[in-house]
Each structure stands twice: as structure tokens, then as C-alpha cells.
Image 1 (cartoon, rainbow, N blue to C red):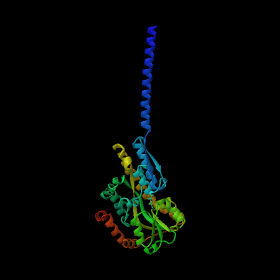
Image 2 (cartoon, protein in one colour):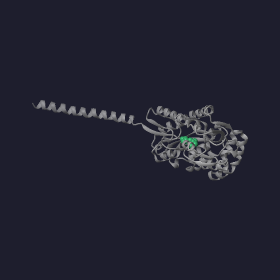
Image 3 (cartoon, rainbow, N blue to C red):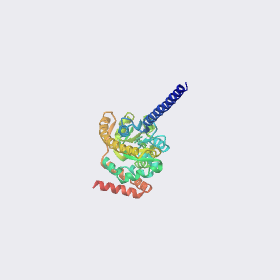
Image 4 (cartoon, rainbow, N blue to C red):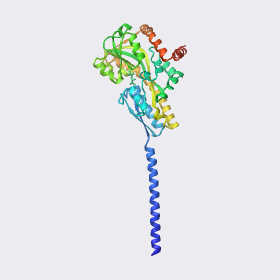
Amino acid sequence: MRKRKMIRKMMSGLLLIGLVFVSACSSNATQGNDQKEQAKVIKAGIGLNEDHPQGQGLLKFKEIVEEKSAGKLKVQTYFSASLGDDLKMTEALQGGTQEVTIPSTSPLVGMIKEFGVLDFPFLFNTAEEADTILDGPIGKKLLEKLPEHGLVGLAYWENGFRHVTNSKNPINTMEDFKGLKLRTMQNEVHIDAFKQLGANPTPMAFSEVFTALESKTIDGQENPLATIKSNKFYEVQNYLSLTKHVYTPFVFLVSKKFWDNLSPEEQQILKDAAVEAGKYQRELSRQEDKKALEELKKTGIKINEVSDEERKKMEEAIKPVIDKYAKKFGEELVKEMYSELEKIRQ
Ligand code: KDG
């Protein structure tokens, strides 16, 4: 009798040990799975549409990150200013409620004035010149100013050379800007430059532009051809004048709050992906710039070239604006910029 009791006790003891062991294994497994399942999510928002080179570049970034991190980093993409415009999304990064955005550098000048040197009209003659400057010491110097504002800059992508559309008259000469109510980005250099050309500039967030054109609150706006096509501005504008008056870069931003919690390996994956997808995006942007012009010709908007002679006159006219902001942004940096460009053009 006593022996049977002993065996039963031992059996239930063994059973208990077995149960504890099994549950421990399964919880580790689930913990393992949870850890595997709980990928780090990167909320990435942009202002332009998915079909725009900026959107296609973001999808390329997602593909590279998820592949290189074996799914441990997941990129959720948001297009067409669905998370807000450039400034709102940049503030969300600073607050840590969003992880990635790729704004134009122009709206950031209110936060980091030195970026304003990139907004000098007629600064770059070619996209390749812009690449050399942005991927060189000057571009790097500007990125190094971001962390103190809660942002990390990983690369420069391309928004492109901007041209003017409007509903009133073709722009052939500087005089044709007279009194035109033109929307600009929230950028003091652009505002003063268009004032200097005789226009009446109005700063406005990008997602408000189409409605403002349609309701004739403004007469016109200026953007690269890919954006004029992607956002269908030709539906609410009569004239497209190829002014090529300024080049705008995008800057690939990450929230510093998020970045600082990543491992060095994860940071490297994001850095490499932003640079690699950036190369892809720039190439796409240059192809789209040509394609968009051909497609815009079929939309009925009246397109005119602006002669180099007239562009030279415009460049001359805005020189006082450049001088004014060179003092504000730093004469040293501006001198370095123009001497770098001279070197490139030799
Ligand atoms: O995210 C990019 C866009 O929101 C914006 O920069 C487009 O060039 C632009 C503009 O005119 O605001």
C-alpha cells in the first residue's frame, strides 16, 4: 500500500516537472516568436504621390530595408501628404510620432537657415552639379546640423528643377511676372526672389496648391515637371513656362528619437538603403522629367521655352536677394558653394 502511494507521488511529481518544462519551452518559443514577430515599424510619409519618383524611391527604400533586415524592420508607407505636409511630418519626427519623411530642403530653412543656400535661384546648371555639391563636404556639413533639431539626415534625393505654371500669361520675359499671384514653398529666399522679379508670392503648404489654383485664389505655382504632371496641375493652369529657375533637393530624414534606439547594424541598414534608393530615385526623377514634358504637351497646357538670355536677366535681377541671404546664411558657406561650383565647371 505504502509503496503504491510512493509510486503515485513520484508519478505526479514527474508529471508536474514535465508540465513545468513543457510550458517553459513553449513560453520561450512564443517569446522567441513574439520577438521575431515584433519587428520595428518605420512609419514613412511623403508629400507626393506613389507614382511620383519620390513615391517610387520610398517603395525601393522599403524593399531594401525589409530584405536587409530579414523583416526585423518593417516600413509602412504613406503618400500624398496623407500624414500632413513636409513641415508637419518633420515636426512629427522631432516628436517621435513618425520615423521617416523626405521633405524638400526649402521648407526646413525656417528651422536650419544654412539649408537656404540650396535655394538660391539659378545656382545649379545641371542635376549632376547638384549631386556633386550635395554628396560632397557642403551637403555633409548641412546634414550635420540636423541632430541638434532631433533629426538625422541620411541622404539627398531629387525633387528637381522647377518651372512656373499660371493661368494668366506665358512667362517669356521678367516683365511677364508682373503682379502674378504665385504660390511658393514656405521659403524666404523664394518669396523675396519672386518679389524681386515683380510677382506677388504667397507661401503655402503643398497639399493646398491644387485647390488654390482651381479656386483662382492664386494665379500660379512653380514645381518640377514630374510634380506638375503627377498632381495634375495642367487641369487648372493654362501656361507652363520652362524657367528652370531653381533646383530643389529632397533630404531623407529619420527621427533621432527612433534612430538612437536602433542597433549600429540597423542604423547601417537604414543608411545604406537611403543612399541606394536615393541613387535609384535620382535616376528615375531624371527619366520622369523628360517623359513628363512629352506627356504634358498632350494635355493642352501651353508650354514655352524661356531663353537663356532672359534667364540671365532674371538671375541678374535677383542678385540683391542672394547678397542679402548670403549674410544671413553665412558668407563663408556661400563662398565655398560658389567656388566648389566653379571647380566643377572647369
Ligand atoms: O514631400 C515633398 C513635397 O511635399 C513638396 O516638397 C513638393 O516641391 C514641393 C512643393 O512645391 O512644395
